[in-house]
Image 1 (cartoon, one colour):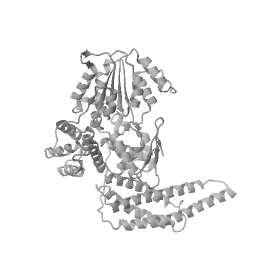
Image 2: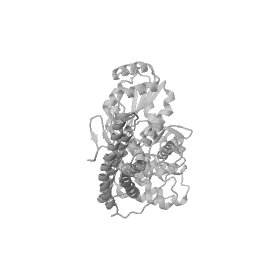
Image 3: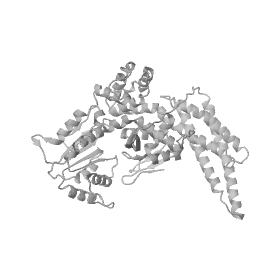
Length: 536
């Protein structure tokens, strides 16, 4: 897991080194001696950045190394703040004008240059101290390269194409039977079937397949996702849009929306899927909008909570992990696009890997995507070894954490930082690709390459994260996704890592602040129940 944390430190260093280079431009630095000090800082930090990249590939760090990494990260942040403040002051003092105004502008720029000279002197001492510590460690330097490509079509098929999903036919048939029949025959009463299971079992995929299969039997339908801190008003509006009801206004509150929905659905046979219900309070408000009209309407809900499932209905469907055979089929379909291995020497290696995945589809997809381009037994054995023996006898959630941590270990350093930046978005949020890439560019996460624009490089990063199953594609056309979502399990994981590394400080609607660091706040994400998240 340490690898995930070190990746943030490497992400901090890249934009800082670029800014130090920019600061060396003649128009910025004219104070005697400052240029030499900045060149020293750039050279020292470049060397330490290379060491951080090596540390990012280590599974565990000893306490002394971890402390050095943390201090260097905060030092890099402080130096970046110093440079940003200086550049802003110098640029502000470049205005035109004559006489007294021009004199004061020049004075302002001169003061800014002397101020940064003093700050650079202090920061240089800190860098020299960090450099001395760095020289006590002897790490072999390695190089990493990343490849980018268009969205893997097999990934999209796993989400949408029933013929390529694994182990879903039996559960789908069972749920359709639950929806269709009572003990003594068909029922016209409203029926609710909850699907319950831990994150990563495929509840949403199963619900979507059932929905797609029987949707045509109903006069109207809707599939709506619910976040951990649900906005009931927004959910009711999404239901309205799904069933084709347009008679609501943006000013309507919960009560008005419930009344209008009940009236609209009074004479209609409907099916509605409420995906990822977290608490009974939200469910109660949603349920009020869906009337029992004796027309055979149906509701499917998915949840991770057995308590919520039992509150929704006495007849629940509890998901089970995939069997070992189905796990193996899913693994090979994701890794090779077939039900059997294409390389005989790899046939038995997945058995040991799959036992540690615990039958969780998300874990299997995650680890198999890592191995898609790894064709030697040694590479597969490395993955198995990295998974460690700590997975044994651990709860499913812990298994998932270890699998996701393993996928971090395989992701290039620059992608890890980009992925952690998604921690500021809410659950089930559709993140527009274009906006996300521009955020990465603004943060300095995109590394420039000859002959390509920063946006093209960022698009490659985006596609690479999709191909590695770390984000889910949305709106795929001609092999390209227009947006993405982050699975809740992965989002929980990256939020934890982002706060541990002081990458972001999260504040929720209950005014809880989530941070494990005593350092300065570098990024702040404030969220509530009814408004869009505010990320600073």
